[in-house]
Figure (cartoon, rainbow, N blue to C red):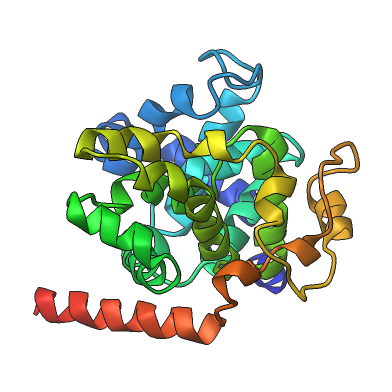
Amino acid sequence: SDEKADLGNGYYETLLRKVNAATINTLENDSALKQIDLDLARTLPTNRFFDEPTSEKIVVLRRVLCAYRFHNKSVGYCQGLNRLVAIALLFLEESDAFWFLVACVEHLQPSAYYTSTLHCAVLRDLVTEKLPKLSSHLRKFEVDLSAFTLSWFLTCFVDVFPHTIYLNLFDVFLYEGNKVLFRFALGVLKLAETSVLECKSVGAVHASLSRVAQHVPNFKTLAQVGKSNSPSCSCWHKFIIGSGVRYYTTSRDIAFNDLNPFPQKGIEMKRQFYLSQLTKQAD
C-alpha cells in the first residue's frame, strides 16, 4: 500500500522494537497494553491456535496488537481489534496481519469508529426506518439495542456467527467497506424480527436478541434477504483469505432489497449528525 511504502518496509519491525523497549513501569501503567493481555485468552477460545496462553499464535497476536497501539495512539487498543487480527493471522503472515489491521481501522472504517458508539446510534435510526414494528417493540420494553449490536460492528460479526458465516461477511466488508455492516445488521434483525415481536417481557426480548444467530443457519440465508448490484467479490476473498475457504454464494445477494437500499451518503449524514451532538455535549 502507499502508506506502507511511505512508512518504510521496516516500519513494523521498528514498532516491535518500541514494544520490546517498553519498561515494566510502562506496561503496568498503560491501560491499552493491560487490556490486550486480558483479551488474549478470550479472542478465539475454540480455535486451536488461540485456545491456550501458550498456543501457537497467541504470542504473535500480542505483538501485532501492541505494535498497533504504538502506531495509532488515538485508537491504541479497543476490544474487537483482537478478533480482527486473529482472523487475519489464520491466513496471513505477522507483518501482513498488522497492515491488514491498519487497513481495517484507518481506511475501511470511518474516523472515530473505534473511539465512539456513533454506529449504534446510526443503526437505531435505520431500524426505525426499515423495521418500524421491531423498533416500536424495543421502545415499548425500553431495550437498548446497542447492548447487543456493539460487538457486531467492532468484530465484524466474529462474536456472533461461526466461521462459515463470518468469513463471508468479512469478505463483503473488505470489498464494500463499512456500509455493508449496517446492511448485515439489519438483515440479521429482519430474520430475528418475528421471534422478538412474540416476546412479552423485557427479559424475553433480551434473551431473543442474545440468540439472533439461531435465525441465520448459513450465509446464504442472510444473503437472500435481498439482492445487490455489487459485482462478485469471490476473487477478493480468495486473495485476502486464501483459496482453501469456499463458502460463498455471489455477493450479488447482499443489498437487502426487502429493506430498500440505503446509500453511503445517508449513513454518513446520520453519523455526522450524532457526531455533532456528541461534540455539543462535550463543550
